[in-house]
Image 1 (cartoon, one colour):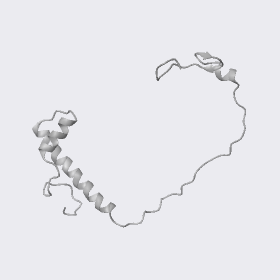
Image 2: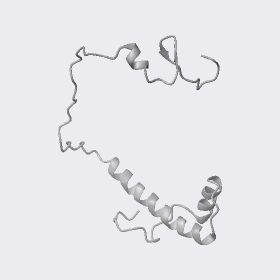
Image 3: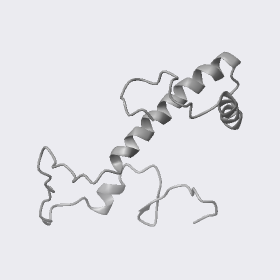
Image 4: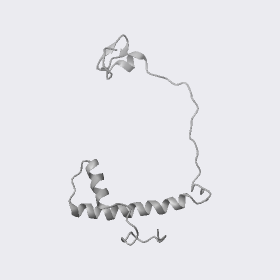
Length: 111
């Protein structure tokens, strides 16, 4: 790899062949033309070259940077409050059974 940050120009070794691109497209069940395979080969190779350059940075022994703002956890104390009565909570429910909301089963069966 050349180490420059210029866009992929094809001068660097291609990471994928057009046959690789065709196999990927076939696996993804995408029909592509020869022209599209060639274009995608260049684009995907450029992406892989870029990712490879990022992995070089990830391997450097660099201390993590500081956050630009402080992280704080916003919490509140639990305080008893007025709550709805069961009757108030159920008053607009489409179906009620034995003092509870009745909902249809999503896992099959009756319960």
